[in-house]
Image (cartoon, rainbow, N blue to C red):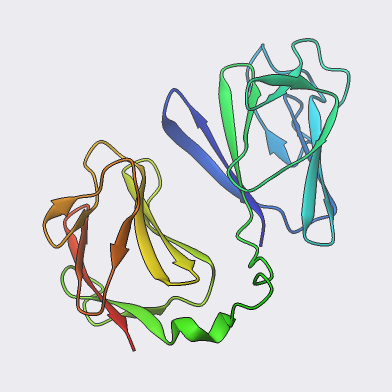
Length: 195
């Protein structure tokens, strides 16, 4: 399900799932997402869900609505776009599985999962069924496991302490993973299993 994560100066304030056709943002208390800040208009913008796609529309706000740094009136959002309203950053997530390109068998990646090896959720398994699976805690440390035609890669999303793969910190480029690899994120160890 599409969702937005609202943050200010790097601190996550709230996460909102976009389950309704219309999700309003603004300062007034009757909005679906209330942002109590003078830089935000009473009725600032609206997120509209049509099928699996979400667009944002500015409601003639005083200070405008920006997507990836550009002022917009209405725009269809892409996964990981950043909406800016005043000092607030609203990151849009929509992990839609794209159709596989012609000639690529989507089942060729086999079965993959991560198994938690330490911490309170030890033994928990998460099947990697989606194209992108995010792990971690927003605002602290988040990593993404992405399914590619030739296997899976691990990428750092946010957090001061980077996710590690077999004790090596993941840099700006995603790292390819293989069966038995150990991921460590925010003190929790997980094993990547792929068969």
